[in-house]
Amino acid sequence: MLKRDYIMRLIREFAEALELLLKKDVSRQREEISRMYDQYVGPAAFYRTAPMGDVMESFARFAPEERAQRMEMLAELYYTESGLTPGPTGCELLSRSLALFDFIDRHDRTFNIERKAKIADIKQRLAGAGSGIGKP
Image: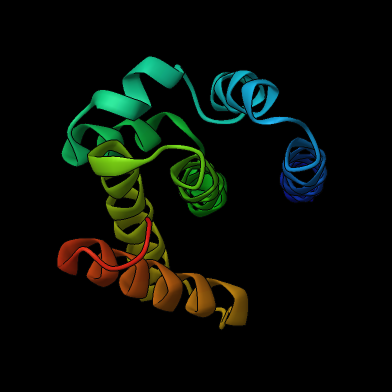
């Protein structure tokens, strides 16, 4: 029970931090995102550059009951950061976010309408970026 309370508190804290982040100017947002990687999932440099197989393996260090939540936090960070990062790097972040959201959606027993909406948005943005229409 304590473990579950800790995870729920961590998720609320993460959501609040992400909401505050979006109210800051772009340069501060980038700094805060890097800090949030480090605080909630691990080294930003690793998660931005490692192959997705290595990223997925890195979650083994978390307790089984919090892995999906940590993955979702990382997916949210990728998703948010992609909006600040133009071009191929932004598309790569979107692809990483989609891979994590898809994985969570396939393995989580709870229906999450926000996750479904983000998956649809990411697919649309990636399709638009591939055709040269729109911005990732």
